[in-house]
Amino acid sequence: MTSNDDARTCRRLPGRRALVTGGSRGIGAAVARRLAAEGASVAINYHSNAQVAEALAAEISATGATAVAIQADIADPEAVGTLVDESAERLGGLEILISNAGIEHFGALREITPADFDRVFSVNLRGQLFAAQHAARHVGAGGSIVLMSSVSASTQIFDHTLYASSKAGVSAMVRNLAPELGRRGIRVNAVAPGGTATDMATEFAHRYRHPDMPELPPETAMNTMNALRRLARPEEIAAAVAFLASDDASYVTGSTLAVDGGYF
Ligand SMILES: NC(=O)c1ccc[n+]([C@@H]2O[C@H](COP(=O)([O-])OP(=O)(O)OC[C@H]3O[C@@H](n4cnc5c(N)ncnc54)[C@H](OP(=O)(O)O)[C@@H]3O)[C@@H](O)[C@H]2O)c1
Image 1 (cartoon, rainbow, N blue to C red):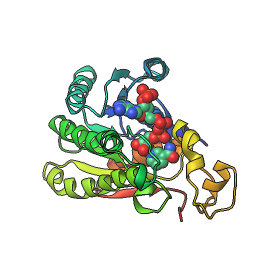
Image 2 (image 1 turned 135 degrees about the vertical axis):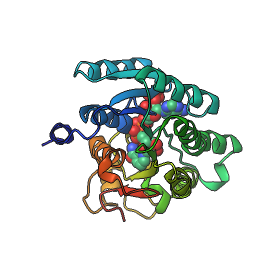
Image 3 (image 1 turned 180 degrees about the vertical axis):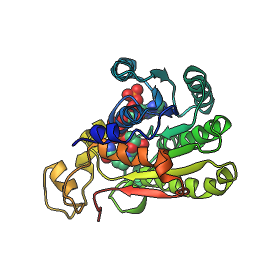
Image 4 (image 1 turned 30 degrees about the horizontal axis):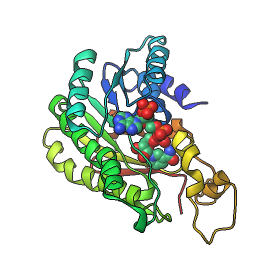
C-alpha cells in the first residue's frame, strides 16, 4: 500500500485550502499530492521551475482536485505576503500553510560569508517566519501551520553549521508561536525529516560524512546514520505533514515531529 492509497481510505481534509511553499519538487510536491488526495485544494508555490510546478498542478487537477501553481521567492518577505494573499484569493480561503521551501548549505566556519548567511537564513528561517505571519492573517480557528525543520537541527554533521542553525530556529519558532496562535485556535508545528530521496539529497548526500568515516558511496554513508538504514521517500514525510495539517493532530501544537528513520 502506498501513502496515496492510505490517503484514499482516510480523506481528512475535504474542503480545506492549503498553500505549500517549495511545492514543485521533492518533499513539497509529495505534500501537495498527499493533501489533494485527502480532499484539500492546493496552491503550489515554486521559485524558478515554472514548468515543473505547472505540470504538478495539472496532474493534481486531473484527479478532480483544485491545484494552482504560483511563483514567489520565499526569501523576499513582500513576495511572501503577495503569495499568501493570492493563494487565499485563488482558492477562496486558506486553512493550512505548509512552509516547506528550503535551501541546503555546506561549508566550514572559515568559509561562511555574510552573503551565505543571509541567503540561507532568508529562505530557511526568515521566509518561514513571514510565511507564518502572512498565513495567520487568513487562517482561522481549526487551522494548521506546518513549518519545515530538519534532523540537522538536533544532530552534528561536519561543515553543516549554517544550515543546521537555520533549521534549529524553526523548532524555537513553532514552540514560541504556539501560545500566541493557540489563543486563536490555530496549531503550529514543524516536521524534522532525516535524509530524504529528493534533488537536494542527490546533490548533497556526499557531504553527509564525518572525516573519520570510512569511504562509502554517499547514500550508503547516509544509510549508516539511521536505524532503518535507508533514505525516506518524500511520501513518508508528506504523510507526517498531512497528519499535522489534519484534525487527527488536534491536540498537537508547538511540536517538532522527527521523521528520520531513527537518526543517530
Ligand atoms: N531532502 C532532505 O534530505 C531533507 C532533509 C531534511 C529537511 N529537508 C527540508 O525539506 C524541505 C524540502 O526539501 P527537498 O529535499 O524537497 O528540496 P528540493 O528537492 O531542493 O526542492 C526544493 C523546493 O523548494 C523550492 N524553493 C527553493 N528555494 C526557494 C525560494 N527561495 N522560494 C520559493 N521556493 C523555493 C524549489 O522550487 P524550484 O523548483 O522552483 O526551484 C523546490 O520546489 C527543505 O526545507 C529542506 O531543507 C530536506
